[in-house]
Length: 335
Image (cartoon, rainbow, N blue to C red; front, top):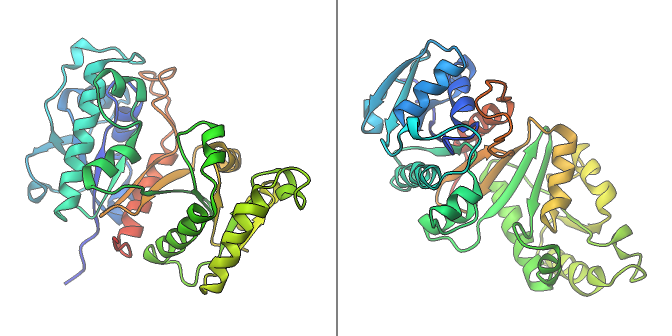
């Protein structure tokens, strides 16, 4: 008997953004069905509107549980949350109702993943302002999923082409990020990043740690964070047997990793790694959350309110995210 393809739950994101559009478009690709059993979680009228916008003639199979799905190309299996009236919203605007609806899609996907009814989840973009209006705790997907699954500090990893990037800090100011660069935190992340790579099938991973200051501080000439925190952490990690190098100047380390010298780079703050990935290939960069009881992937872009409702949204990132969710689910083991 042939092994079943991984079951991937896909949330449609904020109903006023491009999430429903890219979710509808990606379900029209045979490539998605070749590698997975995709299941959409959203709202029927929102999906119907997106199909009409994109002129897609796909059937919708409304289901109440995973087992009712057909998972066959040409039919979209949808768990309809029935939580928003599409007539009351317009594309490209911030709504409390959309923030609440988007959260409930995530909540449903997480609940299925936690009981192993789906193998992984892929999430379309949500809007932080809409979440705030709806009084949803958490700034984004990572924080929400951490709260729902009882995990204190999951890992974020970007992947684009052969480049993988982890983040020591995420949605904090640059000042706060610098304060967070301690020897203890860097050691902890080296350990967790290397083990996370192993859990998605990377054999004998080698991690590079980016420097914070120009030229990694030039021996203290341009800052001493490398001398006091980063270098001692790397040295300690090496004594424990980890294959890790750094701190390496941020203006070259991402290029070296892209060439295959390193399995991944540990970026020290949000824009350091985001800029490298998005400059390399904006549309094909994806985000992967590791350290949860389940694997989660997403496009690395937002709700794009400026083009929402125009039918022009690029689906490369959501396509790559779903394929990665299916591929890595074969290897992924939670902590």
